[in-house]
Length: 111
Image (cartoon, rainbow, N blue to C red):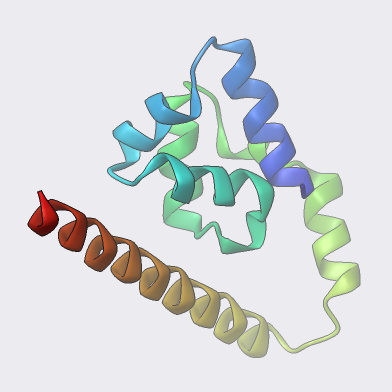
């Protein structure tokens, strides 16, 4: 679990919310939300803002300066390459969500 995901989980638990509660608010499945907490490099800025609003906290509390500095130090890429990598991660996440939807539709058709 990465630092942002860990902070989100900690605050969520302090608020007494389940992963399912947050997932419902975000309009995603609980397994998709669980992956966000475990692998926070999949979290887009828009998603972080939404999570902060749901948790009634600030984005800066979820992403503190130490985390931002660690990201900057670990990332030797140019800013554009970094943005491109985040964009690619978002595209992969969308593909995963599409695959989940297809799977769920097939389950519904079976019944």
